[in-house]
Image (cartoon, rainbow, N blue to C red):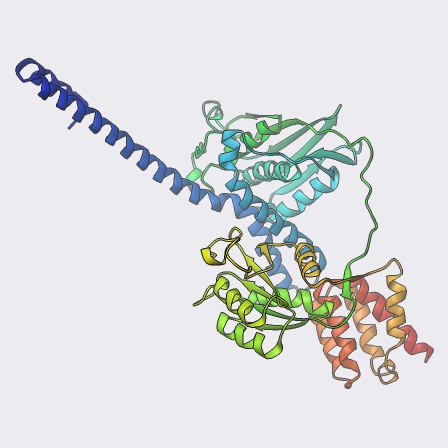
Length: 508
């Protein structure tokens, strides 16, 4: 029944019926109106959820495209240019992780509760990384992607680096998406601590009547918007972030003549440049006896990733693809540590952790790995304050290698061995201690490795290392050391080692 029909019925009852009937009908009308309001809110919430989930595709497309594209290039080029590709893939992966957090922050942005960080970072390097991340997306559309910034830019600035990156990538990705020919330019100006970022494209442009709606959530104003990826959430997030950071954003555009989105915000300079500590170099191993680690995860890629990280550092690693196999493996090898994924087929990671603790006691260090929040899905009886803990640490995926290594070091009380400033000399000393049997036969292989490193030909380097491994029993440790350098993309170490090995071979 409509509201108008209710009003007519109510008037009729008032005129001809009892007062109690009129009162009951009024209460019924109020309940009906409340029910309609609740139903409308539920429909709106469901539609908003649908649009939100669809918007994730738009938000992750740029970094995912970089990862996918460079991975294909590595396969096609037999690993050539691997180091540069790995850097772009890593940065894009980091951005995906940041975006995931950013999507969860939308409610905080809208309520004004978002907390900003004050990072100190190199401005020019930051901008160059953004362009490198999006170059593949632009080149796929035959567009020129240009960074235009003056040489007078300050070296260091202070701002929330993650949020600024999110703002600029949203604007650049949109410009690329709505430009069919020509170029997209990021023009930067800085004066008196006021930074201006202008994203200029030669695209389809925006009609004046649509410019007012461009920053509204889920608005897509282009005539052919449905044919282009995205759902129209990126600019709404961008505007909210810019305002939270104390800046402003505006757009100038003409239909068919391109657009210019301009962001202005204060980026202060640090009073003194940050101290970039030389500190210890990259971790190359640890002091003391070898440690045994069992990895339990049903994802083969995750097992390979962790094995590739830990084995070159000297850990004895064994892997299992499910909880039952992991329990049997732990009973067999008696590990010092178990890295255990929470989401496993059959018994959950929490159940396996409880069994491991019961069987092996507190001496076994158990570290849980999960893409969900800490304690998600953990049985109440194993939570805090409910008896001895079933695990010793929790690491959230995706994780940075250094963060995981910090946890491992803390749990096993390890003293890391770092690459020292005299790293090249150390490699030379190790190469000089090569078994005499290797100095002659391996010389050609080391020469080939030195040349292949210069072009980043990963598969050919692997073949040379395999050839060295087949030279005899004494060659196995040398080959393993070389594989460790290659797995960590430490091509400089590979080159210095190969060069030192050849020098030693000639001196013999």
